[in-house]
Amino acid sequence: MKFLFLEPFFGGSHRYFAEGWAAHSRYGIDLVTLPARFWKWRMRGAALHFLKNIPVLDDYDGLITSDMMSLSDFRALTGAGCPPALVYFHESQITYPLAPGEAMDVHFGFTDLTTALAAKRILFNSQTHFDAFFSKLPEFLKMMPDFRPNWVVEEIRSRAGALYPGCRVAHLNDGPPPARPGPPLIIWNHRWEFDKNPKDFFLALDEMVARDLDFRLALLGENFQNCPKEFTAARERYGKRIVHYGYEPKRAAYEAWLKEGAVVISTAWQENFGISMVEAISAGCIPLLPHRLSYPEIIPESFHGEFLYKNQEELVEKLARVLSGSPGLRKKAETLSREMKRFSWHHMIRQYDRELENLALPQSKKTTLYRKRPSFP
Image (cartoon, rainbow, N blue to C red; front, side, top):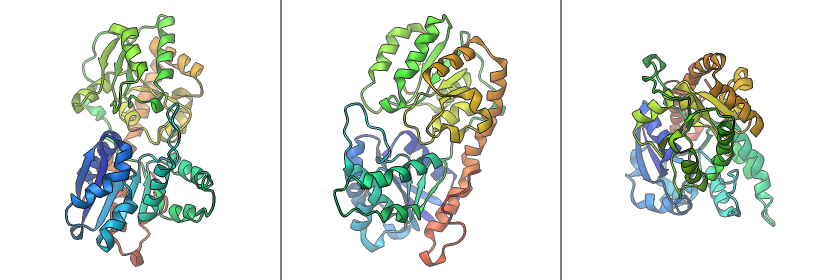
């Protein structure tokens, strides 16, 4: 079988996911993409671009796209020749937090809604994201002054499930790279944007400086817009402590930083899964993550006490413990790193290929493979 994957925002987790699925699937997946910029215009106009710049749809058994395209527009314009579609929600505009001073544009939420209705199958990247979407959707519909289509909640839910993205987990048998001299290395490997809450991250580092606890700092991760002021200020404030500043495009070099890291930290306000965290943990980093969002879901409960924090004060104390040296934490982090193998493409691809098999089936021949909520490995 062959499938066409249309990705209007080919960068970050969207690119990572699309390339991973195409590379590991037993089926043929052709990628047609647009650069990762101008996300609002991608949601508005990507369908019109793809309409004139894709292979013949008759050659495909199914269509895959992400939440960054208006699937309803695309299907309406392609007509009866459009194959059945699966949409993967990395994020949704109905649940996404607003930047300071930003007002919600309800049109993007409605694009999510109509995209879901146009799909045969809808997948969210975690159960946390799935639950948040269906919790917020009724509230979103109440914003309409009248004639609210409340029926769409159950209609969308009937086609929806949750399935973790496959990840590139570290091969721990290869062993860590040669250790560089110096104090413990702190890793930041998230997008440089407001929803990852860099302010609280740097406040915690300021407290380490105040306590005279030494560290090195690698500021990794992509930046799709202007550099947030917290990062430019940090570059001046931490000076020589910063051993890497900015996105690392070379995969081998990025993985080397992760393997060298002592601790990886998230202070995010928005995280529907956490690919960067899975990668860093699998490489052996001690994780410090907020007890919210998807993190309690991806970290087994037996590790919550050591690696999840409930407030800023707890983050500071746990980070101080890591920088002071704790063999017990290091051993638990090594055990946790092995747990991350369950997110590898090697384990996840079977479920994704089952989704493709069901997508290509005629509606009258659904099998038990097409499950509302696929079980996680």
